[in-house]
Image 1: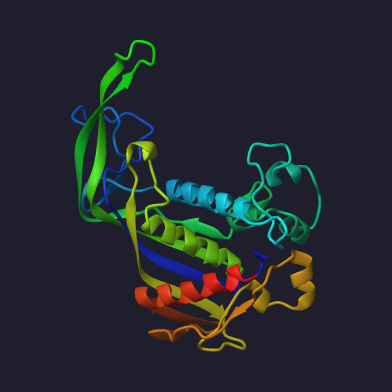
Image 2: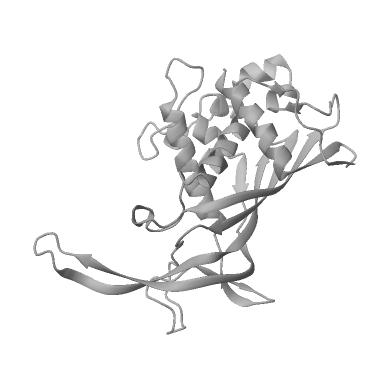
Length: 293
């Protein structure tokens, strides 16, 4: 299905810490002034080294949340929940040495692997790195490890560098998606905004709560048969035979959505641009439609 591009969504997001936030660096910095547990950094020409949020870290926590949601769904529904990642029956291991058509792999993969991919299936979604917008304020927190036997300090004190203020901006990209996949990502962002989904280190210590703002949504769709107030999932672009081969799940179309603030003809595609308020209204309607299936 990746041989053709039917639709693509670009979400321009801004994340800001509501409390201490730490995504730990995997290495040791040459700067002796940095704490033991330091925030991951990247180099930017205009500001040198600065903290940032890796796209892989965000994708990991969102996938984990989506898997929990899928496993919570009633097994009598048409949805297939997430596979056990490290089990022999996981989607990646199941198809590791099989020579089968790509549509069969997609059809028989679990919902999480359809969205995020596995070793034999490319995912539909990707996250860019989230780079700082303006200044990111960090501070040093201190901690110790307490012995459960003696109730005394077993290790420490150690230092943690946490971000407490600032904004990180990046993109979430979803390509050739079904509407239920878009709904799951919208639910993940809403859960992150409400504090149910945290990121980074120390979640059980109160770290990792962030606010999420969708600044802009850009939806590209094949222009053929396009209606201004309708969003189409993958099943809305292909015939019934392909829907059956790939096992595409309904709904394939969603009507009655807000008008875009702007649109652009890209030749083969039409790009529609929505602001944050329109995005919230559209996803509320989307979640309602998908939950009714």
